[in-house]
Structure formats: C-alpha cells, structure tokens
Length: 401
Image (cartoon, rainbow, N blue to C red):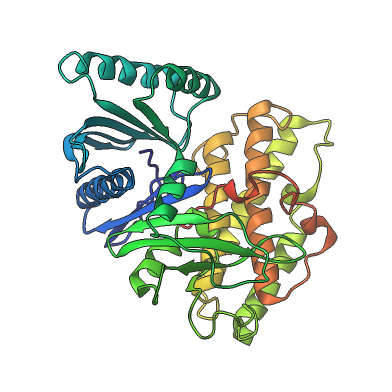
C-alpha cells in the first residue's frame, strides 16, 4: 500500500514524537493511520494494521483469518501476500495486496495471475484476490476485465470494492450530519477501529470548513481526531466528532477575536504579493524570476514571524505552515535561496509548474482561512482559489510542517 511523507505525497511522518504515519488512498479515499515512537515503529504498526484490515475484507467473502506469507513496508509502499481458507467450503485462496500513491500497473496484475495459475496445479480450486489500491491503471483495468471474464476464481478489489465490503460488514455508516455540502466519504483504519469521514465544504467557496469523523456507533476516540487533523487530507481544518453535541454549530461562531485579527492581517499582507497574483508579463524572464524568488523568501520569513506570535492559535498555524512549506518547495525547485542561484527563468516549464503549485496551495489555505474566520478575500487573492468545478480539488499538496 503506497505511502509518502505528508510534506510530499502520502506517508505522514511528523517531525515530533510520537511519529505519526498516514497511508492515503483515493477513489474513494482510505487512510490507514498508525503511530509510534520511531519511524521504524510506525512502519511496523502500519504493516500490521494493514494486515488486520485485509483480514476483515476477506471475512466479507467468507474466509477465515488469513496467514501472512510476506509483508514488506517501505517508503514506496506496503505489499502483502497472504493465504486463507473458506470457513464453510475449505476452498483455499491466495491474495496479493498492493497500494501506492499512483495506480497499480497491469504487469503486477499479470504476474499475480500467473502465480495463481501455477498454485492451481496443486490445489485446482484456489481462488485469487488481487487488492489494488488506489486502483489499477487503464491498461490494468482492461486486463482485469479480460481475466475475470475467463476465470471465475479471480477477484480484483480497488478502493471502491473495499468500501462496499466494509459497508456489507457494517463497519462504516452514513454521515450522521445532514443538509450540508461535503466531499466524498473517506474510510479511516486505526488501531481504535474503522471510522468514516468527510470534509464539510463552504456553500460558496467550496473550500473545507471542518473534517467530520464518525463511527458506526458511539463517539470517536480523541486520539483518532488528533492523528487525522495534521494529515494532508484534512487540508488545514480540524477533525471533529460528527456525533458530538456541538458538531452542528457553525465552525466560525466561536473563533477567538485575536485569531481572526491575525488571519485578517495575513490576508492584507498577501494581497500585495505580486508573485501570487500577477501573470507572466515580464520581457525579462531572468529578472522576473529573481523578483519572484525574493518575494517568496519574504513571504516565508513573514509567515515564520506570525507563527511565533502567541495570538496565532493552533488552527491558523496549520494553514500558515502549509503555505510556508509551499514556499520551501518552490525555492527548492527553482533555486535562489540563501546559498544558491536561480536555476530557471520565469518562462521555463520548471518555473511555471513550481509557481502553479505555490499558488494552488496558497489558494486552498486562504480559502480555508476566509471560510473559518468569516473574512472576504480581495479579488486578486480570490482568483487563486481552486476551481470549484474541477475534479481533484481536494488533492492539492497540503504540508503542515
């Protein structure tokens, strides 16, 4: 199962103890949250959580607790090979589970099916499960359909099938809060149990206001909310128990006045930063690149100063850290930091992509800030808000370090 660092792609590796890890998937989203005192402990916990999770999935198909034959946890992902036996018929089964930050390739599917065919020489009724998270590539999907049409003892599970299986097991339920605008539902796998969540979106800006979390019954453990809030999936908003008595109250109704004032000051400052709002119009691309780099350096320094102020508050700090990390990624890509020169002019593809990512992150975080604190974004900044009609808006990078 694919994993990445929260400041990069999908594994959460928080810089303070205890180290936290998150496994993020999509279509729909499945997050496996693990924690430990060291990264090695996190990896070990993540692997065993995943193993138990797959066992629950196979139980939905009538199989007993499976036996892990190979469990590999690395920065590239988690891979699990298991064997199981049907509790009623005794039919054997083998399963190969893979998940990455990108779709699983057709070649991996073909390799597993070849292994399944060979295993049937000894046990002809062996059923094969291939768990591909988040999903297969287009070529892999075509190959899976072809194999399934000729092999009734072969099953492919993507995240869609995973969620359906969890619903069959009644492990997840529908959101208890109604009449709100939300993102698609996500599934959380933790040592405390399986939970569901969704982002509540602002009715106008379509930016996240809060992250609702709920179980099939009862309350959500505080630790689950603490693990989820810093995850990129949360996009800077706080995770709350959807069944809590105050969960229906408006997000911004009790925001401290001092934090709102700091947020307003951030917006006023960023409104005048041309690197976030101006088009590429300079006829001197090298000079323009230097100006952009200088501006990003100043933004990063200012955000750091604001983060050190006592009135900033934890919620706003998450957004400011995400923007500051975007500045760091921009500078790492184009150069121009304290000890390096600018490596790309303003009209190059590298510079354009880096600038686009910077503006995308700032747009998301500013949308969250404006919605939470009931602030109006000026026209130039409002222009960099994510397109509410575009697919994948929820998947811009969101680094909270």
